[in-house]
Amino acid sequence: MIRTNTRWLALAGALVAAGALASSLKIELPTEAASLKPGSGAEIAKGQCLTCHSAEYITTQPRDKPLAFWKAEVEKMKKAYGAPIPDDQVSAIADYLARSYGTGGS
Image (cartoon, rainbow, N blue to C red):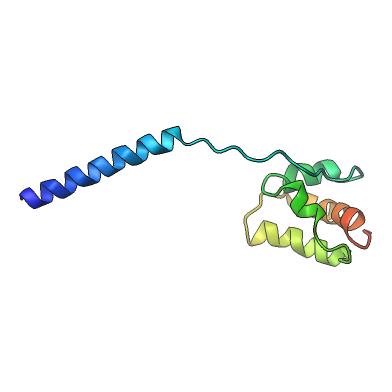
């Protein structure tokens, strides 16, 4: 019985210490170093893509990718990762990304 109480006290102490550490922990993210190119579809892409990604993640992708690649990427983000992209915005985002960062859109 004493051994069980000691374990519970040790666990409670560890939880209190972890809570104190977590409440004093401050994380500062770096400032955005890049921005998406202006153009038709840019606002939709900003609203959807930058929810999870930095603009730099998008702007550093290989430039030789066609519209089909970008559409597949947007679909992957939606289906595999659960990105809340409305179906009616998938083509607009892919077209913008292909025009701005790939080999051209439709």
